Amino acid sequence: MKTFKDTVNRNNTSFRAKLGELNGQKSALSEEKKQLEVKTASLEQELASLRSSQTSNTEGNTVAAAQTQELQKQNGIIVRRSQYSCYKTDCALQANLRAECDKLLAEKEALNKAHPTSAEAGAVAPTDWEAERAQLVKSRDEALEKAKVCISMPPTVLQPQISR
Image (cartoon, rainbow, N blue to C red; front, top):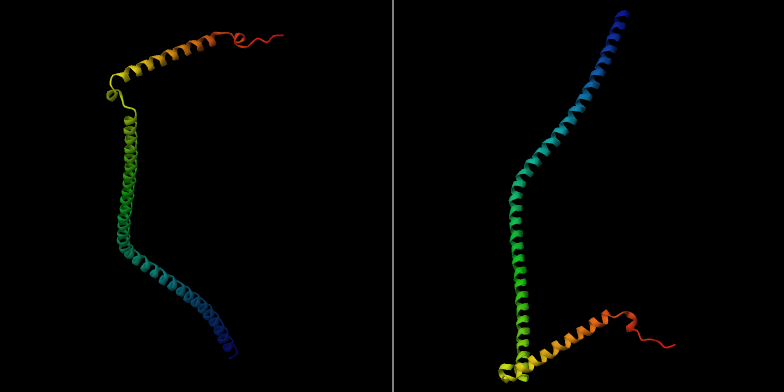
C-alpha cells in the first residue's frame, strides 16, 4: 500500500501541476479575450462615429454650402455698397469740378467786363497787341545776340582789369 499511496501522491502532484499550468493559460487567454473585446468595442464606436460624421458631413456640407452662399451674398452687397460709395465720391468730385469751373467762368466774365477784348473794343486792340508782340520779339532777339557775344568772349575780357 505504501507504493500505491506514493503513486497516487505523484499522480495527484503532477495533475495539480498540469491543472495549475492550464489555469494560468486559461487566465491569460481570458485576459486577452477581455482586451480584444474592449478593442472591438472601441473600434465599433469609432466606426459608428465615422458613419455619423459622414452623415453629419453630408448635412454639414449642405449647411456649409448655405453659409457660403449667405457669405457670398453679403460680400456682393458690400462690393455693391463700395461701388456706390465710389460713385458717390465721383459725383462729389464732379460737383466740385463743376463749382470750380463755374467760378473760373465767372472770373473770366469779370475780366472780360473790366478789359474788353478786341471784338468788343474795336479794331484798335489787335494792332496794339501786334505792336507789343513785335517789340517783345525784337527785345528777345537783342538779348540773345548780347548773350552770344558774351559767351564767345574770353574770360579775361569779361573780368575788370585791376590797376597796380
